[in-house]
Length: 139
Image (tube, rainbow, N blue to C red; front, side, top):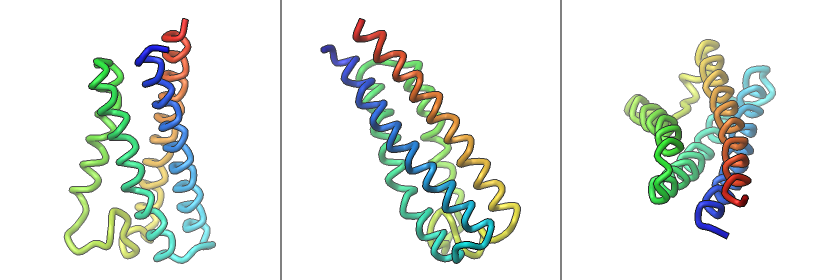
């Protein structure tokens, strides 16, 4: 088995973890939207999953640059830059990326839901791309 096949196999597993984290975030945000969850609880849950999501995505991006897969590296760097933008855009004094005072606004809930859905689509497309490239590397 070649290193490329191992890389794409690892990327698929990593991408599945990212999909589960993202679906968990979507469920948490939808519970907040229909008032099934306290704002502070929802923000704590969302903030607890932000750093693992970033770490998993950065790890797979670094592995792609070490394997000289430049197209996939550039595809993944876009999302890494988005994570950096979200992290550095937050106001000083906020409790995390998702602040209970800011997220309760209806526009912020919808904007965050849109971001999670875009990431969900991105992770699904990447999963199928990695699956295709894994099969191609094994043949």
